[in-house]
View 1 (cartoon, rainbow, N blue to C red):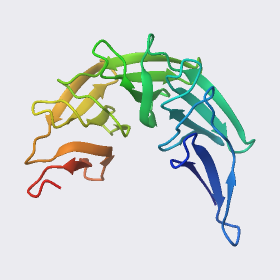
View 2 (view 1 turned 90 degrees about the vertical axis):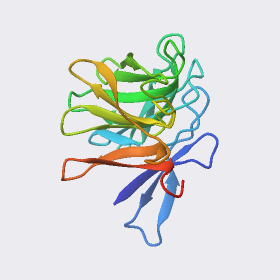
View 3 (view 1 turned 90 degrees about the horizontal axis):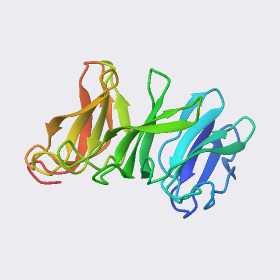
View 4 (view 1 turned 120 degrees about the horizontal axis):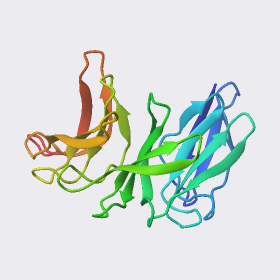
Length: 219
């Protein structure tokens, strides 16, 4: 099989693939990022259709505010498909992208919005356009560093490392139908603080996650 990954140890970021059918295992560089087409790529790539991977970079692009790109591993073609602009939608896209069941892609930015705490955006794969659907703040939560999760109730959930009632982070929910963002839980020192990662939905219907701090030993 073939594994694609982003190399976080290079300043420009390099997608690689590993073909495990080869003995010994071999790595091949398939693309070099640059300032025009995206810089500092990291995180998980998602497959939006057979052969086509989608990702984002926090830097680079015509505005130097980050980009969304595709990589076709069948043709080995890279294409930048969207440039972020802090004056329009926000900058520094971060975390994993989410392909929701409505066919749209959702992600977050570190900066942007009225309070410059970042936004949740919706990206249309057909028109290659993005719109801000929710603004982040210290009340509901800010700094979504890892990505979003769509649960079986059709809502989108995320972990904010800042904000909330105790400024220790929150779990937030975005309602696709109502297009509203709400805080569903505020972390505190005893029950954890500074949540990280992407939530996981188990077969029991509960969402599970981790925090970087808090608990009885604060670790």
